[in-house]
Length: 277
Image (cartoon, rainbow, N blue to C red; front, side, top):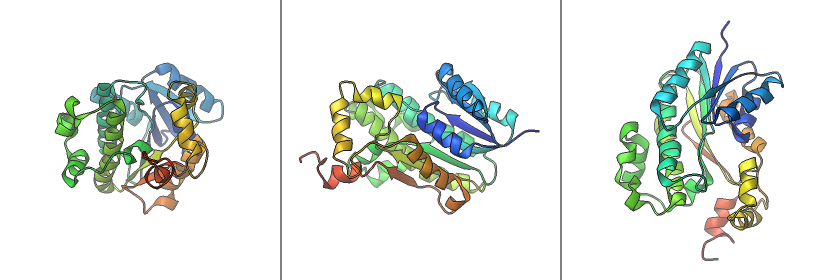
């Protein structure tokens, strides 16, 4: 007998923490561009009693995303989406960041939204970085939210001459994630489904540890030292928020972004992390 299906894109610590919290009793299809990462998560979770299948997906490819959705539908009704996939400013060039974090996330939410079961829920993981950029115009926000996905990367705001560096591209991508969630929530609502966004700050993962020990390490350590929480966060703390959003307790929440950064953004605007401080 087919079970309800959770699609998890991005085989990392945050995605696994959410899947462990919300994926019991479901078939979890965990997909990553690196199949070895997906297989490692599947092995860990299967040995803990979950039902997990590993898959490969290239989030920059609509064809690959559609193939993943087809695979999920062969397993049962898709009732949950957890998108924790993405690349960071230190991992990839501008083009890759825009193709994966911006375009790919938009396509994934759009296509899952067409088939999500009534009562289904989704969360996508953006970043505190989307909150650091100066406000866009209302027109720019609307374009990021509603431009057809295949036209997104043609927007003037996303052209190479208008993007300073990989960090700026990442900020634009994460701002776009939040706006797309708002627009997609309207469409998902027509199917009786909900979708929200979580914007984490510095969360301790293997990648973050590499960053702490790398050339930008002092920057990150200063950020969490000067935020009100005075520490980085954990994947399980992100999963706490996801559990609220994806459970019946969050039934009245859709189209929203939840910032979970220990107050780093507050400190950036009004405290010791303020650029001129």
